[in-house]
Length: 194
Image (tube, rainbow, N blue to C red; front, top):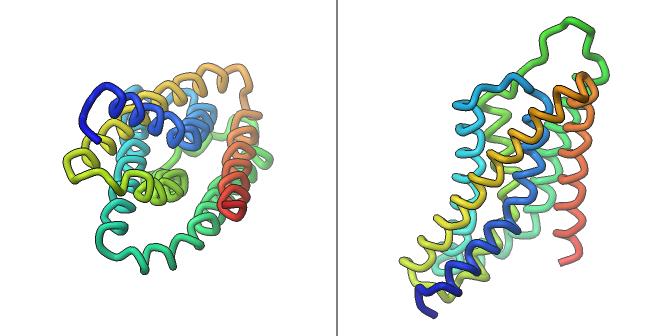
């Protein structure tokens, strides 16, 4: 395999596929915080891009060094994603249901954002198997492409969420929580079926 148009195209498609969970969470973040500044939106998209690029690279490293340990850990990935997204989504759902009119909505903090980034990208560890035949240069270009695609998709997700969030008002937080819980369940079920 060589660095050519098809390689880049496949990496872009891989990035789009991997970014869908992060897109949905970005949408939920935008729904929850309609007044989010552009700098924060870029930062959130950057966190998702970082983790979506890092996880396949870690998977690639595991395939090339500690394969047996990684395979033992892989069965826990759906459980970790489910627990993290249930906690985050459940809190959003709780806040949305019990939010009092006029009360300031709580914006996502750095810890919550990091948990979202890990939860939505942890399943991308197994992408390390699909790019296992790449040399280090190709693996790096592939994960960089995945990260850039994720960044663009997540930033758009936040902006779309902000637009719809102003129309949905307090229901936006509830909707965002439901999205996160649904993603957690989908990752879990998909992981069990594999």
